[in-house]
Image 1 (cartoon, rainbow, N blue to C red):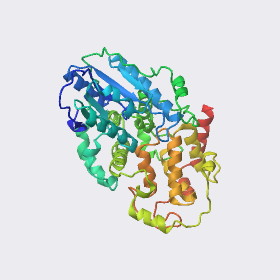
Image 2 (spheres, rainbow, N blue to C red):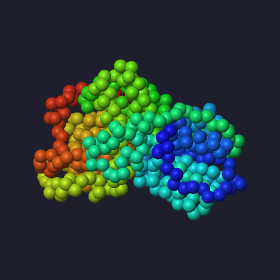
Image 3 (cartoon, rainbow, N blue to C red):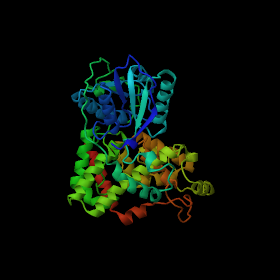
Image 4 (cartoon, one colour):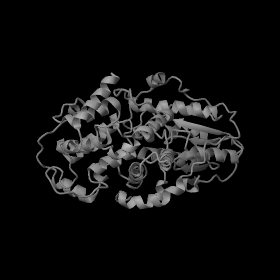
Length: 465
């Protein structure tokens, strides 16, 4: 593993006779395979002749999360627990916000390994644990490992990049150095400690019943969580659709990978996806055009989103999420006349005049996913039909976070900001949008067979009901 993935933020200053184990706090990277943080924790434990404990804290009030998200995540965690048990590594699962639930486990830990958290809440959790350890745990060493991107965010760049064209050459120069996964390691010292979990994850419906969470959005009947499910979708994509990927903007065709759902929860690694992609390309199973097209999305576009949320500190606030020129043009057009104005209720009840938008909403509400190209069109229409730009932003983020399985994500925040000019350029000025990029239904019809999209989604939903 490339040592630059690891950042030691606290060094223990003296020994503690109560030291019993190394502790890995799994949160962002909810997987065993291609998890550099887990590999680092195992290596550290073996070097110190200590056992390893893996901890996960489940907060019942994560911002905007609901039943759909919790079930998908718990399906993945149940698989993680079973895999770790086979490796003789105990998985301690606590029904409490992780920065609080982890505190009792720190007293006897030699080293705490954390995976990198990119978003505001994740950073706040890690900061709270680091502050507590600095005040109370002189003996504890803390390492943070960046494992959910191919090139660590801080290595790829030290600033907020203006766009893909500025980050792309940096990533292309570095990514080969970070094809650095050494395989699944074995723990040398099995744990004989009895540390109880709050639940064994064997009965997810029962566990969900106990949680005081928003249960208004039902779990997807199409997309199930977990590493095995992620691999299923990955192999389906690579074996059937990858060579059509340059045509994946077509909503009528189902050529997208669906892997964003699993990447969001860290249930599969982007590096593992890259390795399979390269293997297929080198064995001449993938065209160069398809390879480069998907490579661009997996490496450059995805990691631009992480650069955005890490270095653009107020990425989640309308007032700070985009560029100065974009705010200027929005201010100039804030009072433009709107032919249509719709409410959130109109959207979720599919009551707009636009059948393509309504179909995209159906895909979102019923499945937890929306075709990638339609996400752009969907957000642009909400901008066009809202009283003002700020209400449009709030509406988009509310729906995005509530219904998408991969909502509340770096890609979501960057993608929505793009609709408001971030990582984009100024276009020819027009009513309502000003110089923001505009999309309309005639553009969809000119490029794609949109009746095919409507039929595809209607059939998809009918077959699941």
